[in-house]
Amino acid sequence: KELRLPSPAPSPASPFAGEELSRLAVPWLVAAACLLVAIFAWTWPRGGSPADPVARRSELVSSAKDLVQAKWIDGPTPIAGAAGDVVWSSANQEGFMRFQGLPVNDSKVEQYQLWIFDRNQSDKTPIDGGVFDVTAVGEVVLPVDPKLHVKDAYLFAITIEKPGGVVVSSRERLPLLAKVE
Image (cartoon, rainbow, N blue to C red):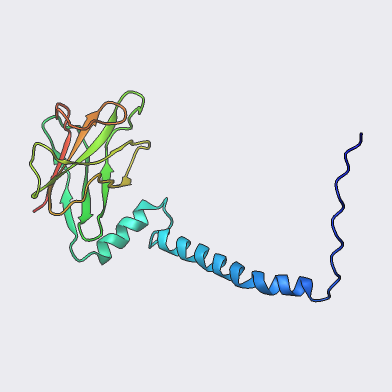
C-alpha cells in the first residue's frame, strides 16, 4: 500500500497576509539590532581595539584618578638589561606592564607570571596577575590579568614559572620587582 499524506488545505489568498507578517516582525528585528549594538558597545574596550594595549595603557594613564605607577627593578635573580614599569588602577581593575630587554621566552619550556601584593592580603599569598609570554624583542606592553579583586597594590613581582604558571610561586626565579611609592 502506498501511504498518502493529506494535502494541506489551501490558504485563503489575502493581499494583507504578507504585510501583516512584516508589520509584526519589524519591532522584533529593531529590538534584536538594538541589543546587538548595546552588547557591542558594552564589551568594546574604550580607547582602541582589544589588541592595542599601548593605546589602552595610554588612556588609563591619562584618565585614572587612582593610578599607581612603579618602575621595574632587579629582583633576587635579575635579568641584565630588563627594565620598564607597571601601571595599575584599583578603581578600574585594570593595568599594564611595560618591558624593555625582557628576553623572548619559549612558552613550551617556561612562562613569565605576574604577582600583585595587596595590603589587604598576606604577602605569602599574592594575587596571580596572569601568565604571559614575551614574543618580540624591544618594548612590550601587556595587560595585567588579576585573578582576584585588587584593592591596594603595593608591590608587583615577575617570576619565571613552568608553562601555564603556578598557584603558589616558590619565588626561586624572581627577576623583576616594582614597588609602589
